[in-house]
Length: 106
Image 1 (tube, rainbow, N blue to C red):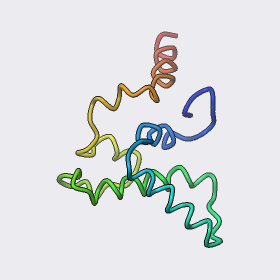
Image 2 (image 1 turned 180 degrees about the horizontal axis):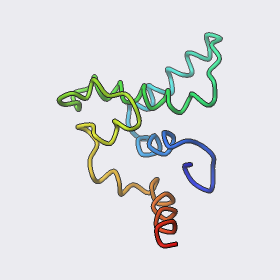
Image 3 (image 1 turned 180 degrees about the vertical axis):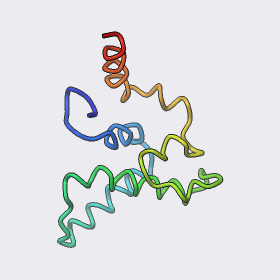
Image 4 (image 1 turned 90 degrees about the vertical axis):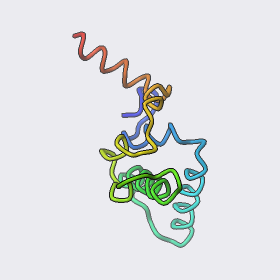
C-alpha cells in the first residue's frame, strides 16, 4: 500500500509522516528490545503494532486532548487532537492521492 516503490501497509504510510517525531525513535527501540529478548514479531502485525505504540506515546504526551486516550487504531488517528490538516499534505501521501485521482477519473 505505501507506494509502488515498496510494500507495506497503510500504517507504514502513516508512520512515514512521523519519522522525525521523537516518539518514533522510542517505538523502534521498543520493538528492538522485544526482538533482543527473543520474542518473535510477526511481520504482518509489526506495522499495526508500531502505529499503536506511536499513538499510545502521543496519547500520554502533552499533545493529547480530550478523549485521545481511548483511541488506538488507524481509523482513530485522523481524529486525534494532534492530527492536523497539514499532515494530509505530507509527500508520503502523494502516491495514494495520485492513485485515487486515477481511480476516480477512470
